[in-house]
Image (cartoon, rainbow, N blue to C red):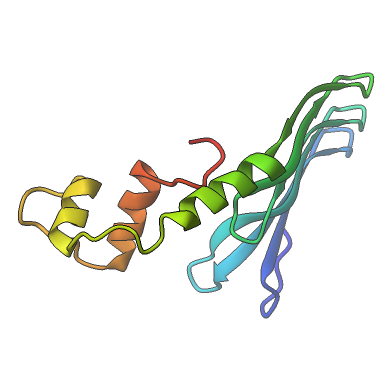
Length: 141
């Protein structure tokens, strides 16, 4: 693990017994005290021979972007998923709904699954439940 105070990124690398890289991951550190992080940049896994096994790209918000790829031992691409068009379409669709909904706080709490008459304690609780239930822009949803 490589992290320096004052720098917003944390790099984590794992190695095989033969000292070849096993995986490398990059995180954006949101809070240095608690080390709360989100995914960022390129995430790669490697075969023990050194060839790339899989590659995923994350944007500044921790969402998959660009192309995600899996490679065979011989270096041939076995699987590719393009998140650029799908992600852009979801953002446009989601932003087109902005301002068109008129609901109050109690209706919003009920939609998120809170019991009748119970409101969330703080914004962090709303964010946590929203990510769990909704997450309209997340590529895996």
